[in-house]
Image 1 (cartoon, one colour):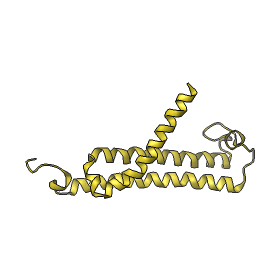
Image 2 (image 1 turned 90 degrees about the vertical axis):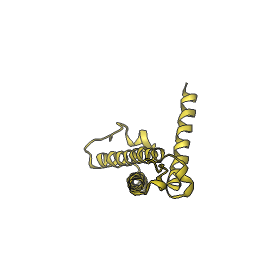
Image 3 (image 1 turned 90 degrees about the horizontal axis):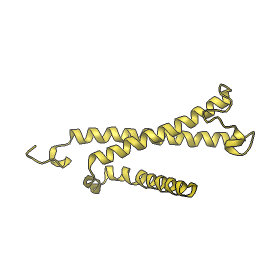
Image 4 (image 1 turned 45 degrees about the horizontal axis):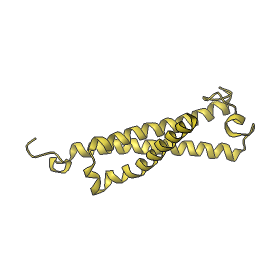
Length: 135
């Protein structure tokens, strides 16, 4: 079962990477108008929320450990269990925090894109949104 679970996980994460690259292009390219607006918006909202949660939780975990408020952070794991070393270097700590911030920033950008896409679709004339003239 472990092998099948890892395979599914790998396929899902791979699909998320591909969508994460294609969706921003679809929002601003002519071929993206062929994709239903709700699909693009849904991908932006879901991706944005997941990225913000991943980044913010990593930053919070590090902050809780560093301040000593929660010795083993949100995960309950020690640094040794998580990173393989009991006392990680400053480089490891700073690079981990930078990666977490990068995830959170990327999520924020996806959320802003979802809002901008919704506004653009709402404000566009009917012939540009794919709606028929009779509606």
